[in-house]
Length: 331
Ligand code: SF4
Ligand code: MG
Image 1: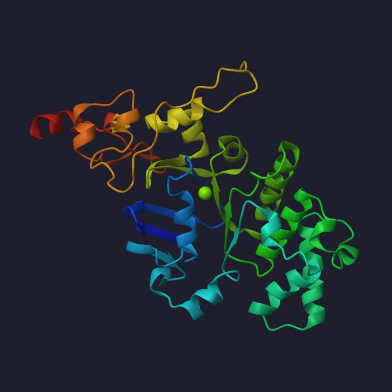
Image 2 (image 1 turned 30 degrees about the vertical axis):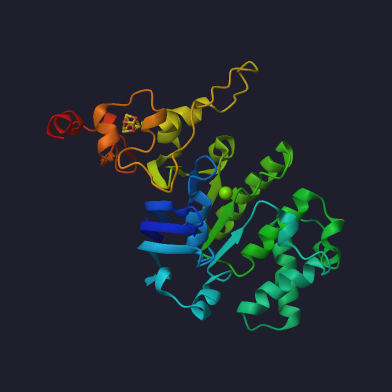
């Protein structure tokens, strides 16, 4: 499968008064053409920082990319200067956020906002931009686009506003769309419609999507592959089937158990006890050790190697690695 984006051993830190927070600690993944890769994990696990770093949107300083590469169209995004980054943002890689209200300017018609997005990157006439805006509104399922173009954000419902934000993100036909909790602010019915919209758009445009979410229900609906992040690292990555039906990492299993299902009684929800480690001085060994019901001696001392379960499925956990026993006696 064609790789559209490669993130290799990415490290990102933030300096704070309390010291340096190591928010992303060696993240590696590929994004294929036309797929949806979901990055899941609890808040603070580094999933948003990872995605914002891909677009170089973290404020530097206090943020700092301390290692790794982000390869997009044979270039390392980390080495690019601001003018080159501006060309990529929106045109090649675009991003949508949780809150559709802040993404839209309340004082400008949505037509003008969508058209501005195109004209920043493409030399086209006003009339061509308008046609494109109409086409985009149709793509995201907004009826009567010619009339709607002249309206302001407050004239749309929350779900419609998120559709407009998606239209704006897609107007330059980007290769990659990063969606950070795109449905969290919406109610469940609208959420399902927006997720369905992502699927339809992907079929039509072959855009590759990175979906950042803490909600495994969302992931189950749209992800082709799933990366599970914990304390700044991807601890497990696999196809949706592999992660949902054959999870290997105790943290992934814990996350799946904490998802409410329709067949569950209220109160059946099992949260994972404990909290993630402090990322000022992350543990040398497995960061999940303090919360893991299967923890072994080696886990605290040495970070587990990446073990491949299948060609697409890998996990960082000593339980899956035969070398664990040998290492216990060596260390
Ligand atoms: Fe648990 Fe050890 Fe696996 Fe970490 S490496 S998840 S502590 S068994
Ligand atoms: Mg976040």
